[in-house]
Amino acid sequence: MGEQGGTVEKVKAGSIAEEIGLIPGDHLVSINGKIFRDILDYKYLCAGEEIEVHVIKTNGEEWFIVIEKDYDEDLGIIFKSPTISPVKRCYNKCVFCFIDQMPGEMRASLYLKDDDYRLSFLYGNFITLTNLNESEISRIIRHHLSPLYISVHTTEPDLRCKMLNSKKNINVMEILERFARADIEMHGQIVMCPGINDKEHLDKTIEDLAKLWPAFRSSAVVPVGLTRFRDKLFPIVPITGNDARNVLNQINRWQERFIEKISTNFVFPADEFFLKAGEDIPAHSYYEEYPQIENGVGLIRIFLNNLGKWNSEKLPKEINPSLTISIVTGMLAKPYLVKMCSFFDSIKGLKFKIWEIENNFFGKEVTVAGLISGKDIIDTLSDKSLGDLLLIPDVMVKEGDNIFLDDFTIKEVEDILRVKIKVVDSLLDKVKPAELLKI
Image (tube, rainbow, N blue to C red):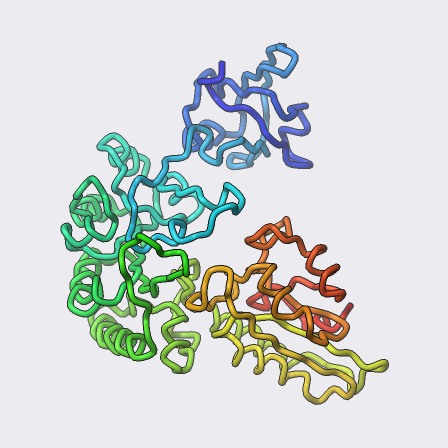
């Protein structure tokens, strides 16, 4: 039984699955008499206005239930694995892999390296393509699984094999060309490592990928992230401010060419390059449809756009009793939080304090807010006067659980620092300025 269909782990409240009486532990054997092998089969079989499901209940009873629903309405079943069948793991050992640079004794889920085309299609996870077999490539093309998100890094086969430390020296362009011919939409990621895949290698990669446009819609250049846990790992140097400026100039030259030829920038640098180079974040139009948000491309511009919407909001002239609010951030983003706080300058009785948190957990080279640990916040702020409220961006905690990377909870940090904590959307999406002032 266990090899057929999938076992229910959770049932969404108010869903069809709840309505028909499914509970955790029930086993969904088949849909319309067909056994499904993974999440793609399951979603395909669920598509329809009338389906029949075969369920084996936790007590052994067999149920055959006819369900009438909207064509694409979800049943509301959550399986233990997001792919139902085992998630395809990454068997590369990339020289820049962030997971290989993490300390021990963190929660197990943080060490899992997926490389699964199904997760790429469904959730936008980036994949290397090194573990795809011919039947899987054919399945992607046959069912038009689009869009896909590809970890490219370089299009030169030998260099890519070296960077991925892969046992399979595949020609990634051959697979990408097959997908392009099948009109599979793709987006690419290039983790730039100084002295390895930069300069002329980066030029070649950008040029090769652009030849696949419009199927290959966009590419992002991302700076390599280096922690202090790199003993016995491949030697990589961090990106300097001068490196960042050179990369931005290089990308800008390509963008000028692409705008003229294909009316798109096509290649986008991560925000971190602008921050390291000390350059202004580009205007809204630069990011077009924001195709590379997951790679940190355009996040600060979205923040600034949302901040701009505050200009129409009315604020009190005075707060009585007075209020002091602290905000934590990574080392690079402080200027933008200063800009946010300046919006409140006219309010008497209100004071903001911005605290930059140095990353001792991963190392000082890691400067983004999303990788700040609870312990680093505690160590930095334990002897500080924080005021009445501490604002923390949501990227610092696990969604839905309010747990930091090192498993400190919001409640634990509150108790240690003796201050009320409020988690705030890091992009200010739908956040009204008055909401930040509520304790």
